[in-house]
Image (cartoon, rainbow, N blue to C red; front, side, top):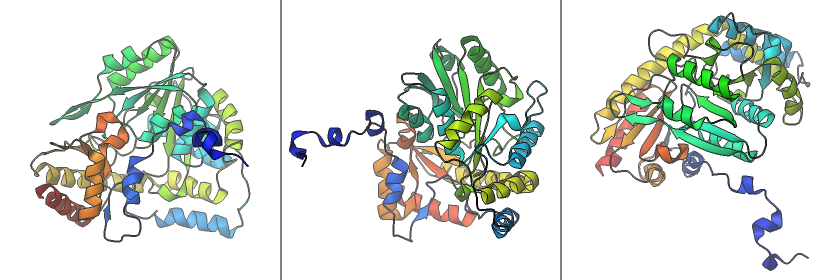
Length: 401
């Protein structure tokens, strides 16, 4: 028998240091406190409160009724890849970047798309730059592959919200940087990159051979100027650019539990992704992909309704939050979150745990999104007004106490 006293337990089990050093999800840490309780109002996860529309569910049910329960192509059903190529081509209408089935890979969720992109591009020791605060998965995924991650923080203004110091980001994108990761509209802040910022980043990345990994999960959830989508690198790029876009069906089409996403990239990258998908999930379920085809093809009305609903929810929540002394909650231009500052709060994790334990309110601590997020709280506003009001009442009582 092995003598456990003679060796450190972590060494005994030979866990990779890059895995052992990953930070735990502080969002999950808060949510786990509420397991088994039905009196908690949960706003901690990025998830709409509506079920997937019936016509999307019906497409999956019909596929199952036909017996489509077998493996599919590693890269996804050709029909879904063609549908996605047509959708992106119409959304971005860039003649310098024609998109076809060869540019698309179907993945088992948006986060799986991000992981696959990282596995395809990153070697141990590669330098990766992230714009933060940021969903922790995006910062930690490169670390799984032993990359060196540097963060460039957005700036916060209590009146106008979050802004990028583009010069600071470009200074961090030194020669030899492998990837810059940009999530816009951003989780958690709602910050949305401008066209001029994209042009500067694209030109700089071209000059130094840096890949742009764009997490576009919230590109359809924008709330100004009647835009169909947020500014996209796909509006500007050409076929020679080192650009990969990761996306998901979860947010725009209300399909969080379906675990379906995609990657759009140059064809040589997609060809290599087929191998990586084989060694991860092998393929996405056919009946889930059938639902995806119908969602993309017939879902514009759903997206328009969701966009309007979330805009109203954002305005209602931020107005209520700003009426509470000590809170700064400027409305975000995109995504589905209020990321608000609470004066005098210096331990957002402890504060959110107390909200759950004593007030039955589930919010995400700002520190979960990096040290830059300390002092802030994230509230997913993809909910009905009455539910938001109940949460606001509980927060106001907690702060008054």
